[in-house]
Length: 221
View (spheres, rainbow, N blue to C red):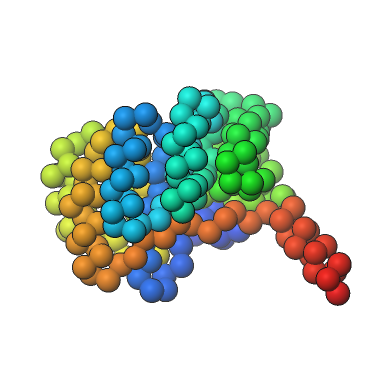
């Protein structure tokens, strides 16, 4: 992650805007029929917006949860279609995983290109170059909750209190288990009391979107 932080934001994004003490909650691997509804209830209770990096086949299984995410002001992200290990896939297969999920998500929010976070954080130089040429970037994180280690929530809470997130942190969590919800049941209130607000990441940038805005501006002129 330290090396990724040295790369330009146009290639790999790891942090959000630091103004107004914003924290960016992000959740990978959902939606999950048991865990995601409880997490959404908690976020709603704290008026917190988040970004969900979804697996395409899970989207097909639980479309009602994706509809709820959009309706409640959360942002959708792309986490591939089957969650494979991208380091073992040729570029064409990686792009198929990404494009299939982008098409699924567009049916819910109307966005053509979503932020993409590679499964397990693994990506190839070929994919990074493909994205860069098209004005897209890979979305990572700057603060790792470690919830995927399946450690007791009390242990994670203690660690996150000892090294708390700073303004602009993109926090990595998961919604295919209840660990993140149990951690946030304690920490969301503490972070709010410290003056933080919880935001969804802005929509992904792409060359296609820039060209569309430029065309619309030219037509208006």
